[in-house]
Length: 345
Image (cartoon, rainbow, N blue to C red; front, side, top):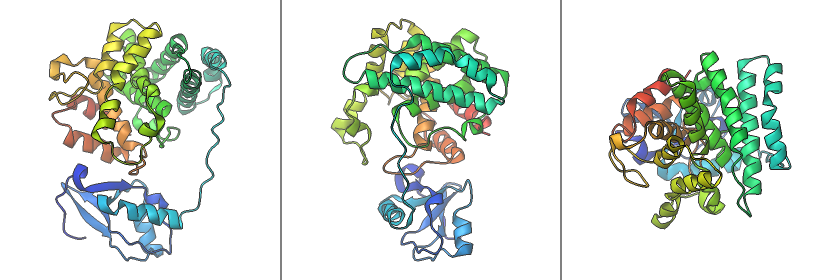
């Protein structure tokens, strides 16, 4: 192993997907793994990925990094050597929002036929995703209220499932989307939030409010330009200011949809506030940030890290959680980060 480089994660290195390497190829960039507070070289630039080296660098659960400046070399390598994937069909499962709402209200029938906890959670995930996708399609050209009753119904079943059996982050691994989309993000944050809610001794009513706040925390992004949301580079100051308006936009959409619960609306407003006052939209500090807002903030950041971005690969669960704990000590509530770590797998 080479000398440990004392460069923190958020200033020098980008995670990459080690499943995209191809045996028999050569790389023109150094590959690193994290060790303690720094990084060591795992594979040097110029190395041929023979059978032995390939097995070493593609181990499951191994988090591999490249220097930020070399990420473009990794992307070129993937473009050159990876087998092209057939893009998935974008055809929605449901043609109309009414059909998606009807299916959501009948989800009990599907759950009763499911034979395992994993299968039941996947049903809730897919049904909620179908519902939100259908709403996004119909609200694109004209305002359509969010289907609150159907969402409320699905969250009730999710609460029952996570309270009935021990649920960990690894429980969701087999069916959660890795690629970025608004609906997938909303539901993943909701699922992660459900783990915290089930271990915080909240009563049923509060658990449901927490999950509904998580489910709708970013719906304001539906009003933003898709090119801005999918920009492959870092945002400039003007673009970032536009993004920062989405918390308040989410609150506005929910109020227009008929949601009046103050606890839910406040949590949605607060999910980008930070303990040290560095967050937005109001720059709130510590005790002025709502309890549910603090919980959603942790899960929101966790999902951002484990999701593939145009400018980087996804972090592994372990690395993402420990990165959050190390670099958000004065920004996020530590006890909720530790709860996710404790129930990660």
